[in-house]
Length: 175
Image (cartoon, rainbow, N blue to C red; front, side):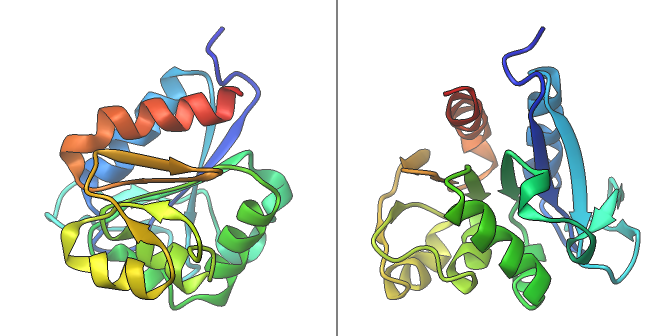
């Protein structure tokens, strides 16, 4: 039995997602025993990755789920977060999961979704360096580290940080 047995994790998908930042957490959290639900924006069922490979078929969309359905949420990076943050249902889901004290994890540009959900103020965070100003303008303190966990927000920078990112998500969900 894995350390996440009985937990349900939502992972967002949209076109131009960073393949490694979706699939690595998908399989690592699944390996730990979690049920994974892939969540889209409702535009379509299959989204393509940033590098043109590994299309992902979502299980549902943000309009059809509730924060009560999840023990945590993961927002992969790539260019998908710029699209995800345009959908009120995505932002509502992220905000409600956060408000319930459940882990909200974002890697790379995924922090854009957390910023648009208005949950970053007063937190410590990291991201891909190009959105450091966005993190700071949202009221968070930026750290250039492989993973930053501040209460129930977990952030990482790039695919190289995925092992630390997933370890911290598992730790947060196990406590």
